[in-house]
Length: 196
Picture 1 (tube, rainbow, N blue to C red):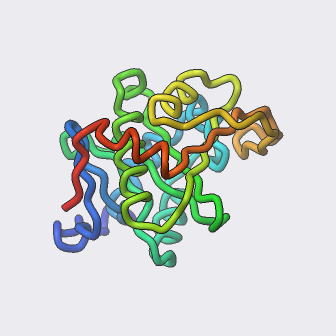
Picture 2 (cartoon, rainbow, N blue to C red):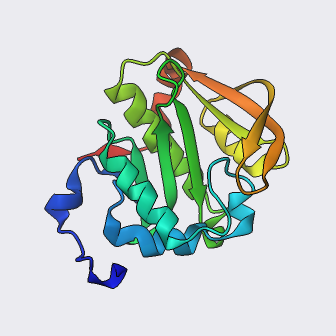
Picture 3 (cartoon, rainbow, N blue to C red):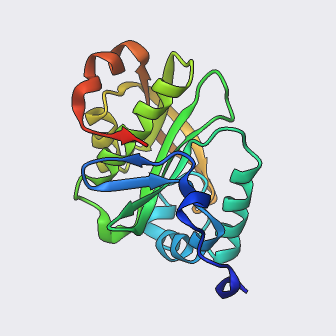
């Protein structure tokens, strides 16, 4: 089934492409579902990410990519390193007054600064393109690495809440964070992400 999906041309996938020093961020397509499913199908990722089921199958990736075509904003990005997918980053608009930054990386790519780099590019895009006053995000209390990423991006701790995690089938404590436009503006020169 999926092997019959042609690889999209650059023009088809172009939309908004964000580039950082090492990464390219672009809208995922159906041609990416196999790679997304392969990366996301890891319990260590799912248990730290609220909405990823485990096991994560290609059908989940197909549904995810198809859901993006029904949204009007291009604010979910496939993270690529040397043209190979390594994870996802994006802004969730379910709560229009409090857009939420989310991200995950394949386990082989943890601890190399890629999540911080991708998150910063998505944050810049969100504040540059949308009239928002702040972003929110969260990290499981049991996930200090994600907390460090958010703090490096300027997010400030705002409390602890219980959030339901699909992969573990229950709620767990989450450190909540907020990044205001003012703080972002003061930190804006943190990198060299560009949009083309």
